Length: 452
Image (cartoon, rainbow, N blue to C red; front, side, top):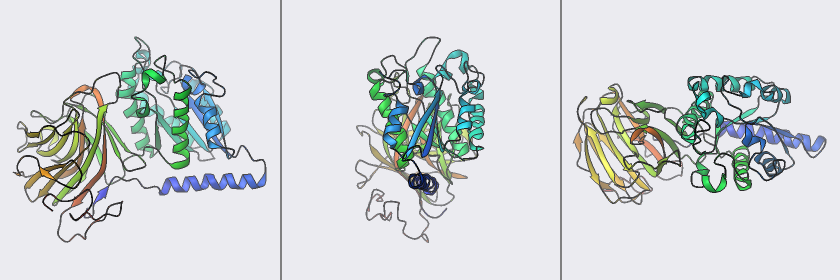
């Protein structure tokens, strides 16, 4: 791959669908009543039913969404308190009238907000069936004659209730599985989890259900996804993903409407003989440079403290050598500091050189020219400084990309990385221009080369 590859998602599919819905709205508005044009149908549990709102009929998110979308849309809901996505969960949404009612309504848009009750121990015993069950629900809806647009929702964070709903399971295990379903079916995801990481106690009085303000935020997030395309999307080709080593938890990743890459990863990282991390990457056989701005790193579960060992950044590694393979990376720590980390030979202990007192956000970069690899960081995206000394590293089957890990196997960390760019340094490649129109040749823009 010769040109730089960013993570800004394509909007062609979203644009086509939105134009179809708008055309439907206009056609109906000129041919009949001024209401009930584009049908939105919300599937869910007690949150969708309206629990937590002072008036579930007017202040829960479904009726609020109906008001926000305006007269061109109508919003209906089918929700059952305690409902699970899992078919063997109790009670399963499949066993209510929800699926049949949704198919019968044949809406233009379907919103699915399930997963909270799946976290109960008796239900999560069937965790290995979650992705398959969700795919079955999605495929049922995709086969409908109206070919509806389907939005999956990441459930909000929750408290830890003994033998009941468990916020840790929602954050660490349910979220990545929903993102995996979205990846397999190329669906958009409404993130209703991240917006509440700092407000769980204030907006969810019982630890589970949002109050009026919480429901309003949910409605606004869904409205923005439908009208403006503000949703998470699967990472586009040629990017691929993998959990390197024994991470303990399934990782995930997605891009938002601004091209920001969100990576959920677990594992101990790059210390020792075996790595354990989430790696989003692409093949890069020649000279290459990877740059990213690490904007934030925090646990997906707001009730647990982000470990100081959590980190995220850019990485080059031998793709066929497994967890103990050769690699070089520049990683920013959740609690500060930037490190150059490497493994010179397969199966050896990794090394590190760290610069302390560097706080997020920070730009990081790794560069390979021949077998010489180097790392850099910048606090402003313009002035670059070396991290450690250049090293000689014979990488094989080179994979280039970004990595994130939580510092341990029990928690999933969410890293936000902006302006992710993988650029070939082959001399015959034309001067690249990024999505923002800026040159990437070292003379202007966030990707200026160290030393000018």
